Length: 228
Ligand SMILES: Nc1ncnc2c1ncn2[C@@H]1O[C@H](COP(=O)(O)OP(=O)(O)OP(=O)(O)O)[C@@H](O)[C@H]1O
Image (tube, rainbow, N blue to C red):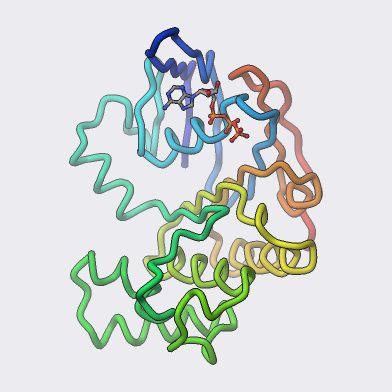
């Protein structure tokens, strides 16, 4: 699904920072992959390149054979809308919209009809166990519930690749476990490919594969059991 060839990313500023220094990786359809590494090792930069939010300084980011690095902004925007969904540590929900409106947002932006939006939103709220909270505002919810809203919003478009940046980073271990179980069941039931950046070894152990970064390079790449 995704192949990176000799990907480098530098940031220009007062001094040049090399965030990624030659990454070679292939991620297959239906994999659930954890990315770990020390602070500053390039994890978020790598996730942004996979999501078409940024382009590398050199190298190729191939999606189904097409190079995102050589695509224009319009093509990358289409890729982001149709292929990618994101979840973040800080949820990034719209505070003035109710749960069902937050989840509906990507479908509104895609111009989907209101009948279809209602059906899809009801379906994903059921999937994440939040039907009873549909008319609540985000600040009336617990952290775990907010992350489940963010997951519902990510699922509603049916994108095949879910990118998650520290999805359990703000949660206690019980709530974190619920989110990991939910991601695992999405992976199993829908076949969604999931790439998750985490600092937490327990979260990583929910995945099938662990990629370790250090100083912008792949330091390790190994298969994990993946909890069933
Ligand atoms: N927009 C930017 N401008 C300049 N330097 C940046 C920018 N974004 C990231 N960097 C630098 O690139 C390197 C990699 O950053 P990145 O955020 O990818 O690391 P990370 O592994 O995700 O770190 P953390 O675990 O702390 O979030 C760091 O040295 C960082 O300071």
